[in-house]
Image 1: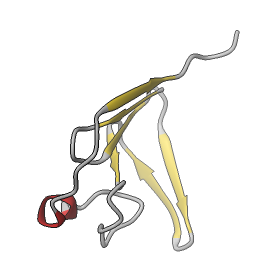
Image 2: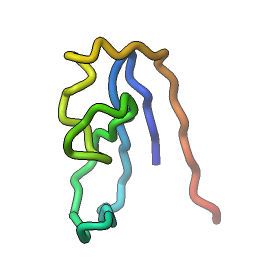
Image 3: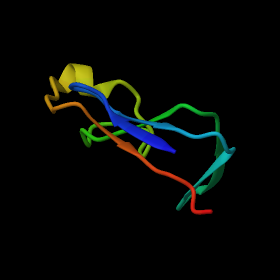
Length: 70
């Protein structure tokens, strides 16, 4: 699994396995990569809807890479 915080944008989640997002409104299957809001302005939280652009969200880019335990 890899999570990349994009420059001035959302967190991009990439994985080799299928994903299911569990929210208060139910479960939603996701395809990799999926984009998660980190600006707080999305109307489709936790998913990004592009609202960070209108909000002029600014944040550094970074990356987290996970490894499977043997």
